[in-house]
Image (tube, rainbow, N blue to C red):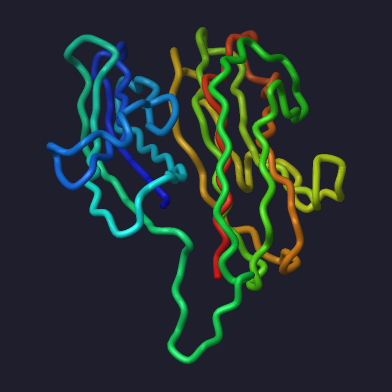
Length: 253
């Protein structure tokens, strides 16, 4: 299932970041923990904006659940310290996959519902300086099969920081046919489909961005990965870091 959390908040003193993450249990609030709250892997974090509410969300794929079992999900939050942070909005959304449903009387084909896929790495990358997009080490990559509709939901996200108000860093998806050497279907671009850090962020903030990719060839195997680049034209030096990178592809019937 897709698991999405969102938060809006501000830090009136400019020193505390707000972290919000999902927790999932079996049955009820007292049930066994299936997913512990963790901002790095699935949560959303605010940069510590001192004067106004910042709105962020993050969507990831949760697998391994037991069919027919009732689960309980909630948002959990914390701050990095102090008493000046304020939360205006908290939200959580759970969307079963595959997306959509079959209409009565319509044939159901296996290719209508290929599996959703997700990849993540939390290896910290400190002070990269590359102005062009690269995959990094290790690469955060996956393969997926295009459904009969030729459309998928494409999600890229992670955790980005900027220790001394220097260059921003961008995450963006790249999609190719078959493998990493295949023909490029989607070139990485933070403007159209990526997620970026703030210039003024003092530490890691977390989030994601969702978009629909269409025009794919049904049944074709595609390769997708997270690429990152540094906006070296920003004022300041290379003080930006990456805490996590993740990518999700969910076929749309």
